[in-house]
Length: 382
Image (cartoon, rainbow, N blue to C red):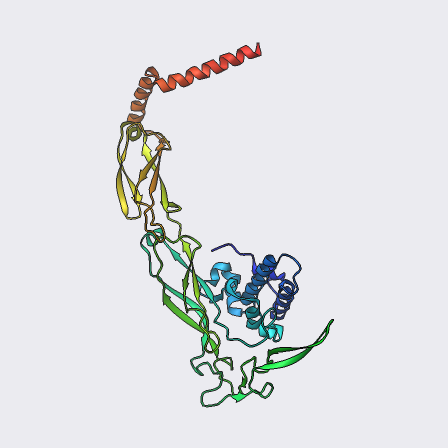
């Protein structure tokens, strides 16, 4: 996944900051970068606003904060993180309503609306072999879901909810606002029932009247062949529940490709480096190389040079969507032994004598150029 800044740095607090300090830092930063207040570039302000919101989600939750302190961003896998990139400002303000005191409508329409559920994100690690064929891993994550005890009503089973006395069950109240142009009336969600039109006198003990509870979820996800590192797979309807009658959010599963001990990926192609002996490079022959489907014997042409590349068609990865196969590129390098046995040394000494007396045209041409260069250099100095 893309690298992220340290959450404590984002909020400008120390790692020993209390819950109240975290809340104050977030409120200050969120109000600063909200489009109604931010005076700089709008896109930059929006990105910073969502960044501080993500930091607050982690540092305000004791479980997520502990996992983050111990393992960093990687420790939040499966923790049910919200996908703030797909949220509007009003959704985020409503999400942290206890901090902003009913400012969820800030920057949007004042009337109540049914919001779809929040998106979540998690991560799954796959091998190159799994990328080549596609995979169906089982992922685990936490999400806020409808409370099973009260079935989302927020009331203790066997009790009833009552019509809100503040708004009369409409979920909205009118508020007079003083401005430079005079007094205006703004319609906003009722601060008592939070726009629901109902109040709970005997809340459910499991969800404390919210109608939502944290739950652990296991899910099999179909990953198509050819996906790339950092790419996200959207699983529709696996995010958090929305308002009654509104759709659930989605789950975004980000792909992390595990490093392979022998192969490197470059697009849809694979690269491996294989050592060969001098004798094999000179005489030619065969050697075994690793592929994603096992060892494969390849031909080494006589006269192979150090750094030459042999291309294996169709041994790479499938292109996402088309299925067209990439290539595997085998880079050969000639291995020079550091220690020689006596017979090995004697044979190489004989070969050296032959090489010395049998200068190839290429070597002769090179040394002639060297001689000409230094001869000309000496004349210039004279």
